[in-house]
Length: 456
Image (tube, rainbow, N blue to C red):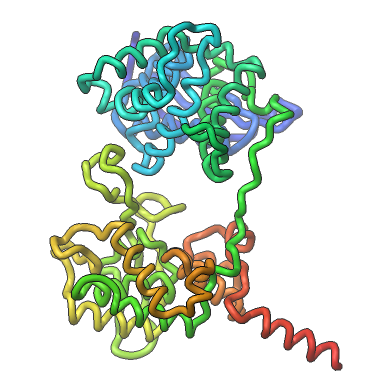
């Protein structure tokens, strides 16, 4: 294979030679111009992004195909099993830990279904899944010593996997789709799980289309199979009002061992008063905080600390070190914060100080606080602050519901949607579809206003 590192890219452009809308990706490899036409701008930009990511990693490009080596391996794969391994290798270096987890989870579900139906000696489903998730799919795990049953299961999958070309048949792709609907115990999978895994399956097949291994995405041809509907809008029953939020923040100080609750109060306050995601609050540093002695302050967010299994992170730590969601890697987000949160953060820093790297919230040993730790404290606070009826209700059932309450409050206060979206780190369309909900007690206010209008 003749390779080069001499690569140049152009921006995606509309294909003027076609009557139907399509978009052209153009790049140059070793002086040779290459191009590829895709039917939507989003697909074209995604393909161009993969090319640029490979170049950024210092990957060599194949002169003949114009593709980086990792993508050329995917293209040259014959079976679904080989194609999936090459696809994972290509995606892995620039994927977040949670993306890696989701990717391997979906592929470990669908790959055992895409085999010769008459293949003898099928291993147990649990063994097949363990082989894929723990040994075959993660690149770093492929060199690990494999127990006999795992090695046999991997060999069986490799031997009996369908050809990529076979996935053009609707009956074969349905095997994968049907597998997504079941749990390992045979019960029905949750709607959100099915939707998430279907998205991964669709993207892998679309990549086969991009590399011209399939003429079109076969999932688009499946008319009788529909993914279950997933609730997008926030359930208004989870949203607390300001009085309830303050009572919960006070109750947190009594939750947990010794000073744990008091330490977490400011963490939860950031979710409610600033609308931060928990991972953004965990990554908050003193240098990110502008905390004047009076009036409004601001947070300049730069880092996020999402939690994932250690096997999916590059560092081997439980928390990934990422940029902000829906932002470029080094793009920050400024969030104005009210005086009440300024005071809480100043008190927190005075009592607990900060870590060597400036982080406000950490364990006694300086680590990142786990989801289990802060959720346990939150559940204790709910039993202290809420009535028995509210405790068994969905009201503020999860810490993330404080963020829902914050965004709903801003919208109901009349703040313009673009400003709310900027503070929350969302697109306006997502914001209005998901977060535009009334806070607790808002129904009574609305009824009063409607009643007053009817009297008039």
